[in-house]
Image 1 (cartoon, helix red, strand yellow):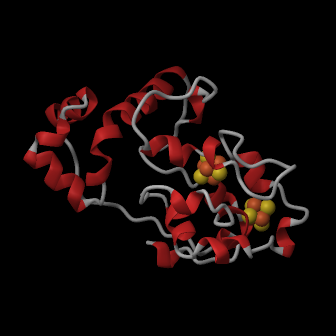
Image 2 (cartoon, helix red, strand yellow):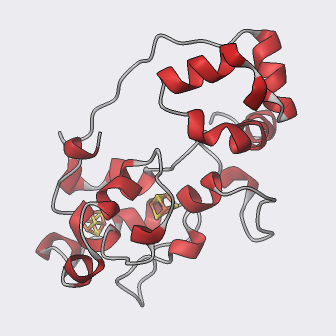
Length: 179
Ligand code: SF4
Ligand code: SF4
């Protein structure tokens, strides 16, 4: 999917973070875009002219990872990062920041420079109630059926965090609507 996201904007504000390039392989296209270049290449990027008077991504970011005072995003606050590492959610992360199972892409979806560059695909894979319960329980890693489905949709590597992430989404759904 990374080849769908080689828009200039992605190679500006977002992939300029060398820290992003060190993250684990991620479902998010943001991460993959960041991994496309070496640190040297990434650090040599500068903002697009279009970024100068634009704050769209900053305003859309649900975690405050994009700020005025710094061009590089704060990777340690990026939801993509926290969605993909095990453990508890940081205290500062608002419950309503959760909006996807892995990754994030809010900033990419709203960027005017990405118009026409993002592609969404429907995946013909579903999980029944018992499989969902297993995922929520955090015990899905040893279930061959679930593993096969997750592999099919490219999420096998995220099995350890899926239950936690799904719970966060469900909690948000019950307390705020719509998602
Ligand atoms: S949303 Fe605006 S500021 Fe953010 S990367 Fe796109 S053009 Fe630049
Ligand atoms: S991926 Fe999401 S959390 Fe990370 S910088 Fe973009 S909008 Fe913010």
